[in-house]
Structure formats: structure tokens, C-alpha cells
Length: 202
Image (cartoon, rainbow, N blue to C red; front, side, top):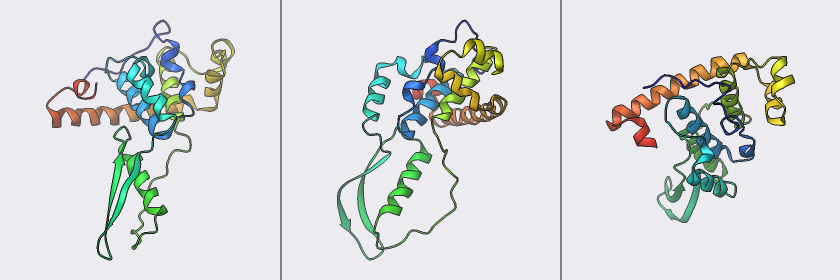
């Protein structure tokens, strides 16, 4: 697997750091964009998410609805402890999204039995922050520090100015861990499939 991509001020284009047009998308869609952009850092060879027509079509559809899980069809009755349900599963969703959606479905149903509760990790308050952290990671790769000079001379738009609320030093550490975990996931995918992850996913 190749080393993490390096960015320079010359090759860092607006489409590589400006995710402002995606800020109102459902969290499921943002997660998909985030993984796409992570994989670019790890050598997928792809352009920005919106550079592909199929992705632009996906985003346009997601603005209307991108639910990870939807119930369809009639409920088939079972015994007192079970019932059969049909679901439409959005496979563009991440596993945590699907688990959260099913958990929310359980909580909203008047089921004959109550599922046993379990401790779950908290969900991000704002999923879009993940994409902002990708932006910061790329700016740091290109030699920007996020100091006063950056916001005075470079950040001439609201998107970049808004990155000032995020601690860039913490992002550097966090992104290192996220990229390491993603790389391990992709290596595991290669072992299971016997193919390069780029061919499997892209």
C-alpha cells in the first residue's frame, strides 16, 4: 500500500478542500464522502468526490432521502416473541450508520417485546466536521499552520475562516489515527478478496 498522499500549495485545488456544498447532506452521505476522501489520501487515485457524475447523481438523490434503513411491505406475524419484517438497506451507509438506524427503528416501534438495552458510543454532534478535518489535514500537508497569517492572508472565504474554531494540532493527531485505522481496514479487505482494495472499491 502506498504512503499517505502529500499535498502542495500548487496542486491543492479548491475542490480538494472546499466541502461547503455538502454541509446540509444527511450524515450517511457525509460518511460516504469522508471515506472516499480518506481513500484518496491512501492512494485510491480518484479525484474529488464530486468529480464523478455518478457521485453527483448520488448526492442529488441523497438531498431528498438517504435513509440507511427503511421498512417495506407488511409485517408477518410470528409467535409471541418474534415477527418478520422487510427492509430496504442502503449499502452506501457505513456499518455504524446501519446499526444506529436499526437501533432507532427498535426504539420507535411498539414491539411485542422490548430489546435488551446496551451501552453505545455517542454519535458525532456534527458529521460535517469530518470533512472540515480533511480540509485541515490537506492544508497542513501543503505547509499551512492554521495560524493568524493563514486567516489573514489565505482564508478569504467563509468556509476557510470557519476552520478557525477547530484545533489544528488535535486534527493532525486524530487524522493520523483515522488514516491508520482505514489503512488496516483496506489491508483486511485485500486479504479477504485477494485483490487490491482500489479494484474492489473503485
